Image (cartoon, rainbow, N blue to C red; front, top):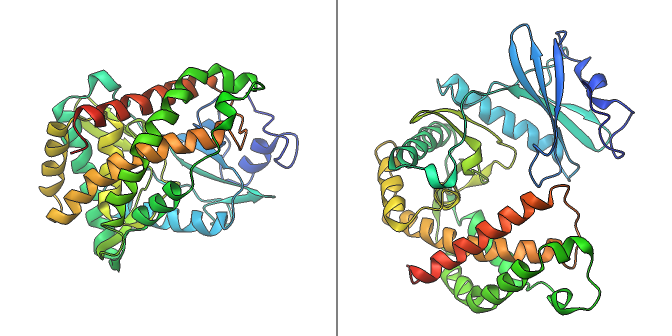
Length: 338
């Protein structure tokens, strides 16, 4: 089956046109509805003689193809170093790792085995294995490129917290149906943001001018992006947000996505340290970026569903993410923001 894509993509059948540029004939092409998460990406599963691949259409953004070259280069570095949980990137007939069709860009990566661990099912072994895999990836990347300076994640988070979304849409008489779907949760999130926003800003400001070791990081490592076979990590996917930053940013994102309690954080950090050093200051930043990240996530959703009026194709998925964000905020309160 072939997807007819999106009105903003060029041509009535963009996947067929893109696949024609690759040096193989696919056996089957299956569009994956809603598999691109909240980014707006479009995905297809492509079966071929040499295996199964994932064709991805990246939504438009400034500097997209330059960023894709950066991502693919570092994926290749990791795979060449023997990290088989990192997908291979397939080249076109012309030797390029991406295809441009107007504002959209496409790539094709190896379809990785394994399944992500669900929230209630994450064990200590899963947490430790995920953090060890991340440390192996960071170690390879850090050996190839190392910088020193303030954390990009800290500065981005400060910028996010500096601007409170317009919350008048919550109490307004005229609300769109999509907003009303999530009305109760959005009201509660707004209350939490008003309570914790300034605390989050203060915690981040204490780290804003400190220099850290920086190297390529995933930036958006989420529990759904780490694939397991029993307790072993056999796949890591979605490298599209990769950028230069502190490893603490990735650890905070990964451990927070697993709904880890403080004891699990310690287990994950120690597992990471068995592979790659992590200073006490970097460890502190893991906790700060996790806690402030939840406040920033709540603000993002309030902004997206309110003033920006952004539409998402999966309201149930949106509600699940809103509920997750609320649970994490409640966890912060229980643990006294330590």
